[in-house]
Length: 294
Ligand code: C5P
Picture 1 (tube, rainbow, N blue to C red):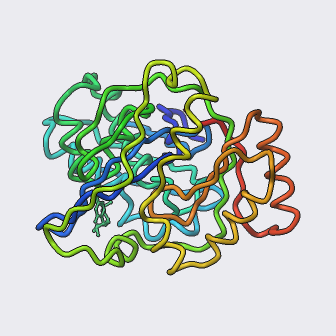
Picture 2: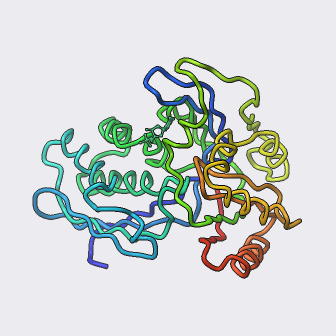
């Protein structure tokens, strides 16, 4: 790694995801309880020179597509347009998360780039230009700017206060199929302006914020509205969910975002790690990662 500033780009997990409406602009209004994993990518920035460059390395770098399309560069350029004198420099992205996987990896990388640039330029993380660049980079980038448990509403720009949720031992499982987000949303078949009720957003009261056993039934009463459509596009997601649900130690199994990554929640890190080993033994080519959510 070259010298410079480093930021973690944590995986984002949607514990719940309700689709509420299709807007006139084609986007969908959501309600989602979002948390972040200890697992993630890492981004390094070495200030110097004009403009930005990016090199990708790491286990999943090959899946990330051309660097010219990378959200790290998009976010950096959007911020540079708004902050006169912002230093240019070289980014190195260590890619560990699967791509187009429902874990917001690209969004988290972009948010990490904005935090690194803010640090290099002495900008406050509350500077509204950071949030503006985040919004213009993509729907999931604003929530990744200050990665913490919170409700996300609308198209991802309406962020609730940070929630003190209990830490949740978890297993992330990606069955190595990329699911394009527009195909999942498009397949919901909602007409422009149509709204959906039903499944109430999980209500996180003070007690359940601290107590994992109180939180789990609330999560179980909710769901991910994108799961059915993603399963139709990629039936292997159902296989991953079935493997998690077949283990009595798994308290809850659900898809994150628009898939294909699914997560299982466990009582202990040891149980999550054991489940990971068991899945790797039968599906050695899948991406399997025990981690902590919070
Ligand atoms: O904003 P982002 O580029 O991440 O969104 C990718 C695609 O996902 C959009 O083009 C849209 O088809 C779909 N989407 C949506 N509603 C959202 C977020 C994404 O319909 N709230």
